[in-house]
Image (cartoon, rainbow, N blue to C red; front, side, top):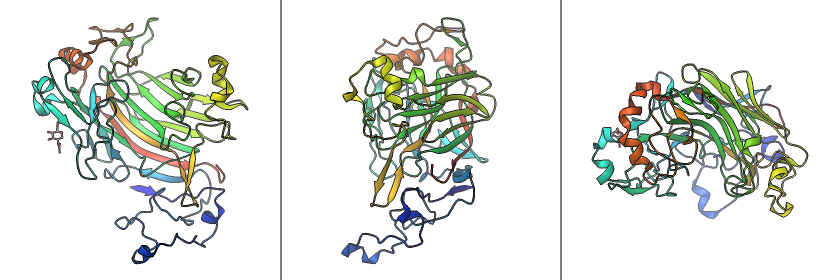
Amino acid sequence: MKLFVGLCVVGIFVACSAHSQPAPRSHPKDTKKTKDAPVPHSKKKVFNAVPHAKADYECPDYPCLIFEDTFDTLDLDTWEPEKTMGGGGNWEFQYYDNNRSTSFVRDGQLILQPIPTSDKYGEAFLSSGMISLWGHQPHNLCTGNAWYGCERVGNPTNFLNPIQSARLRSAKSFNLKYGRVEVEAKLPKGDWLWPAIWMLPKNNAYGDWPASGEIDLVEIRGNLDLQDEQGNQMGHTHAGATLHWGPYLPFNGYEKTMGSRDGNWADEFVTYAVEWDDASLRIYFDDDLVLETEPPAGGFWEMGNEDWNLPDSLNPWAGSSSRMAPFDQEAITFSILVILQYYIILNVAVGGTGGFFPDSWTNAGYPKPWADSSETGPRDFWERNSDWLPTWNGEDAAMVINSVRAYKLSPDQ
Ligand SMILES: *[C@@H]1O[C@H](CO)[C@@H](O)[C@H](O)[C@H]1NC(C)=O
């Protein structure tokens, strides 16, 4: 089942407390519309999409469930499939499409399955074909043209993205500030897979990445056996949780807000959860507290600027009275409705030259197929597919998600 509940936000008493619905803005042309049906084809109450919210419910107690998807169906109004070849800023090797071969629901589970592009188009296509994701209808518009994301032409040097995969986001349906988000999932196993369950802010109220923050509930490298310089296992049994925050690149204080654990992330279902309020942010793998960040009175700026030594005039969060900035973002629309800002992303990426798979680490059996300095990463990667593709064992290489839930944890947070 799936549940959406309109959530009222404390501080907006007009909207929350009363059944006195605020007067919609009058507009002469609006008279034919029914006032309670801003989304005419939807019977659901869609959190964040109702322009004149009234108290849809009141939480009888806490924690209070405000969002739930247990994937009886894949609701594309909730989970928007991204369509882009851009590679997430890391020149990753997959492209994302709206395609039920790579994102589908079966038996109450959401499955995100990476597959070789050549399965569809043949291998020669990678060096000679063209992929256009531009689209022209609401469901098939390219969602990201950055880094040549919407259209690419393959040639013998620049191969087209050799993997087709999926990335789903809730930006248009569900966003949150404070509370708990939990995702019960089994992560994929297979060399150079990079699955992630994470959150980004919708409006970047404090500026471009990483100024507006990023919450990574979990990410792993799917490799069967990958070791760092010290011999630590960094493959699929090693999972990390991270916050990204900083005024602008290269200033990102993420190293102060990282946690990791060793476990069976690709063999078992684990509930990955973030909980946060106006004092701290915590990430759990099941009941295990993996990351806890409690910023000092001076907030993330004070925490980061110990190292950055930048003038305070560059503090992007100076306008907020909360020490949790940038993780405190909200916006008020229609004068009454608070739009909270962090949305959920579920994706399976592959490789990339951004440093997530360092050249200096040791992969058992064969070396990393590409160098991060390579300008032909997708080609280098694909040409060695006889090394890594055998490690992608059917749906073991997929991210399998049982449920996504969100809770409000207290009346005022
Ligand atoms: C989805 O992907 C599969 C596998 O690549 C392909 O065969 C199929 O044509 C795609 N479907 C659409 C609608 O593009």
